[in-house]
Amino acid sequence: MDRLAVEIAGVTFRNPVFLASGIWGESGLSLGRAFRDGAGAVITKSIGPVPREGYPNPTVVELGEWGLINAMGLPNPGIENYKEEIAIARKDGAAVVGSLFGANPEEFAAIAKVMEHSGAVSLELNLSCPHAKGLGSEIGQDPKALSEVIVAVKKSVRIPVWAKLTPNTHDPGALAEAAVKAGADAISAINTVRAMAISSKAMRPVLSHGLGGLSGPAVKPVGLACVWQIYERVKAPIVGIGGITTGEDAFEYVLAGASAVEVGTALSQKGAGLFREVCAGLEAQIKEHGFSSVKEAVGAAHRK
Ligand code: DHB
Image 1 (spheres, rainbow, N blue to C red):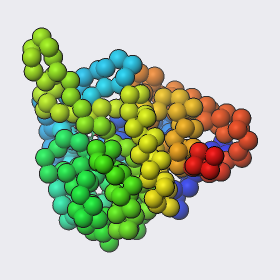
Image 2: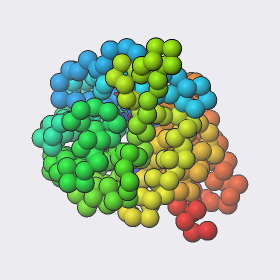
Image 3: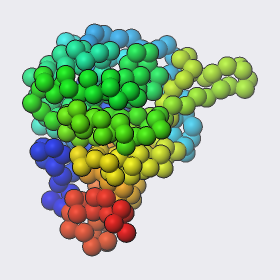
């Protein structure tokens, strides 16, 4: 598996296929299980400063082969109740990346510190949830607000900080540049694409919240374009996310500029065998195209 080991901002992961935030990250046990199932790293559910219920049902709309739209409303138990889960997953041997959100730089910085103390090996800032008032992409679409969050988090922790960016912007490269200037060690891209489902029968939006985020195969071309544009603007490593179901999908992200990838929506259809399947498929692609490591293939499509 050495051909697959990757380094993101000084942290080495055994392979570049990670569990995306929001999928199976509710508990230390579920994070540990995903790691045992072959994930190179496991990203927690996004955790906020205090317990949050989220939106009432319906919170998910299935779109068949396209993927799904969800608006959960960032439900989570709050960092004080969640920190033990990180410690449990760490004891289980998992490489845990803490995903967090807040309403301001101080909230982000405080949660980040607790996550670091609980054993997270890196952090992924959710600056990109597409529909939560005053949170997520409302901060992450504004380079100044995004920078302030990153500066505050970087002051409060020593572990690497990844900024998870939104595709709901006209210039993802500019957001990435602002993030790196503020101190981000890596960029994760993309979060979900703002979307909506309308029921013609009920003549109203399907989700209780109305707006949601689209994920799954339908967003892969959007993710690839964002990673491509970000790679052209920053030197920081990129973690590619969006519609990855196969090793070939992962390889396409690597060619666009990603050093690692995250899988999420596909897990609900394919199950936990997916990590090993995508790893094996990616390794086959790397070999077939004459590369000796993932690192060597990163951004190769830009050099063609
Ligand atoms: C939610 C959060 C996200 O970051 C996202 O992309 C989609 C949904 C949520 O909790 O609702």
